[in-house]
Length: 322
Figure (cartoon, rainbow, N blue to C red):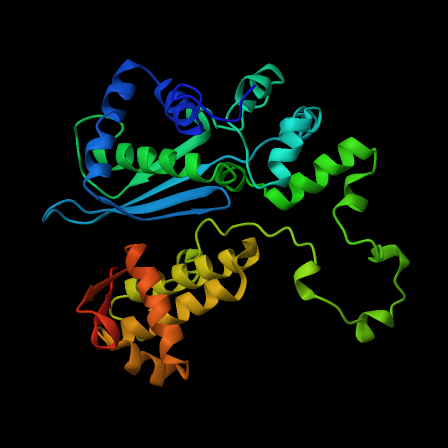
């Protein structure tokens, strides 16, 4: 079977089909999405472990914030996914090559694996007041924008389902060789924790990125306000809550594998918000960074719709989109 997918055999089609199973009315309203996606209304689409989020801005209408929370893939389905893909040499080679062919969908269905979540495994939220039925046009548009991204990078599905491609490759290797997953997922010279001497913990050296962590995303970073009340000295605690949410989101990105790049991006956006509007040289001076590095980062953020820009080059003025 060819790895080239037909329009009916794509990850985007699988996603939209799964979402449309809610019912005819939902499917019809979901069909409003492509119009707005084609006009660039969906901005800053971001996929993290268990979540997809984006902003919606069309014309002069108020910007809406949409979040899709996705339930993690159950352990039994994860094991079935690993063994199903590992049993086919073409899929093993594809995953090793950075691809996840949509032709795997029928085999995964037969194995009882729902890599694409069912509609009831997705919780949608939007801050709009639209009363035209479920889903609103903003959520419908994000579903379609996300579906398009899944065709470009199907491994985003793993992230949405609380998994990652590195662990998938290790698990598939273990399934094909008979090696246990814990051994396959670590480097050949790694030691198990039961093999370490207590004193070694203070003298050990190595790559910190090799430490395997299992963090969990904080559902409500500002929950302390509910427990302790509003912080003293703030007439309006909302800006502080938003700051806490951004800090927690950045911490999650780092924990999920985006590393220092996520922290640098948030630091740049924080400084840009503080200056309200600025140029690459001014931001570089404030941060102590190389101006070319700042300009390149801002250009990337501009194409992600995270910042707005007026002008070109080092004289361009930037402002955070939200």
